[in-house]
Length: 240
Ligand SMILES: [Zn+2]
Image: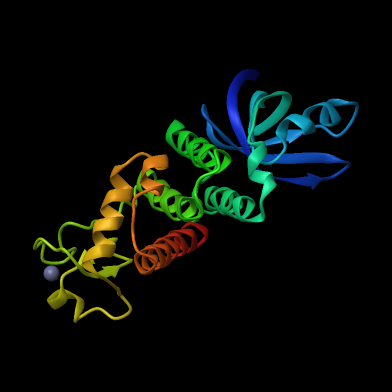
């Protein structure tokens, strides 16, 4: 039996398969991350491809038969045209798409990552100031991790539960450790008060506002490194 459904979706990536077919990895409002095949025969793919370009949002029609999902229709809803105008914006948007590919499993049906990705692309498309633009992938990484159940614990020590304002971030615990507990853990990255406050703010505010939270270049750099470490840790765990 075939099930038809329509959903808004953003293309994460695509690859060729077999005789000119194309497999699209989509992040959808309804269905989460999906892999859908566009038939290369006839005129289907050539009709769809233009609507599914990178950095655009489309309404797609999908047909589910058993474990196979076919893409039968796509109409572009919004093209984030300004993203392609500068290398820096393209790199920032590309980083967000890569995070979706690395962290979200196929079949994780939750509409929130889709809304978050759309907010990130919108912020980049709207022509944010350079420091805001550069903060988008970091904020996206932290907020996506939170949506997927890996929200960093930054108010209490992950070992002794004492209140903490700074300390060392322990990736396996997903938590900040106080100075005394951190002594028994190797490899936990030190986070100062300013960085901890910055991380708490960007986890609390919605994306466009979170990317505009003011911080020193040093704080942004430390937060970016922490977000990268968090993502790498969970991406490795997911693929293991
Ligand atoms: Zn402690």
